[in-house]
Length: 333
Image 1 (cartoon, rainbow, N blue to C red):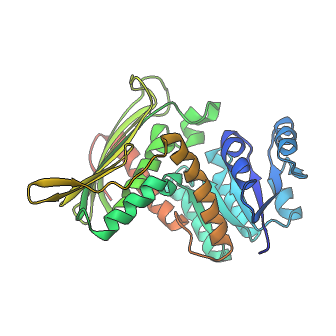
Image 2: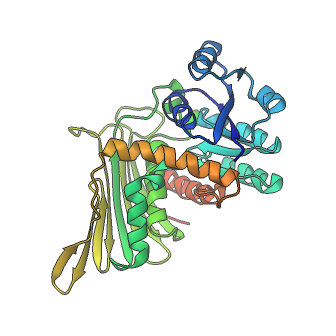
Image 3: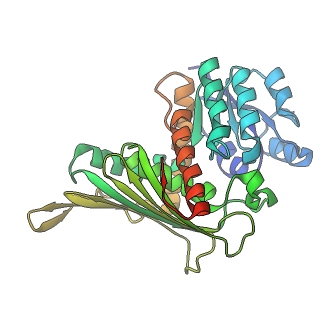
């Protein structure tokens, strides 16, 4: 099988720690080119991964390189311009989350993908956690009944120390954009993406100025299901915390720890498959699985998972979260 030539634009932490190491381990992939405005970082990273084609201007990469696909790992404010340039150059694109800062900014990216008949995938690696994929399969089988309520939370330090990350006009937001969008996507995916009908959000900025560092949201969905999300960079917990609880009419399931229970009459029976993987192992596999899925979509082996169309729906909800917090009221979508 011919190897897929891939480029990475933006060589910050996510590219150095996740994308480049994982791409280099995939047998049917070649990392052909990289682009980064910081020349010293560009050369250091390219040397480390033995990448010959290196550019300080991504437009030069698109003009001169013969890559089929591009991973966009630049700051969020640049996603729109970089992604559209890649699509116009007939390249498939994987954009690190979020797709853009707002729905209005994300829409032209999706329209460009449709116009040029290229894939846009958004990095939502939690869908690719082995435990999440098993949970999705079990819920789809109906063993635990119909899921109707998801309660999820994530408390940890912010994902980047870059100055742009806590500037609203550059990042698009704070902990909602960083962590909340991941929980939102995972929750909607677990529930089979029901349309969200209303959002109520409270934001707090205890240690930040222009963005929120703690956020709590309640979402109502069209099929009578509901979602409760809490995310924070600043809650004073003893350690980083991630959880998801899924309540069904005939059972209950959770991630981290991974558990599945079914209620029969008045007895609760555990259906949890045997699993010995650590949380770190599950997280590492999620990134590798995500990249393999993207490459498979580029090769035409299967449809895109976490598509631009789904990302647009997520951004509409995220916009409503910020509107709700700003206006201090429930927002109908």
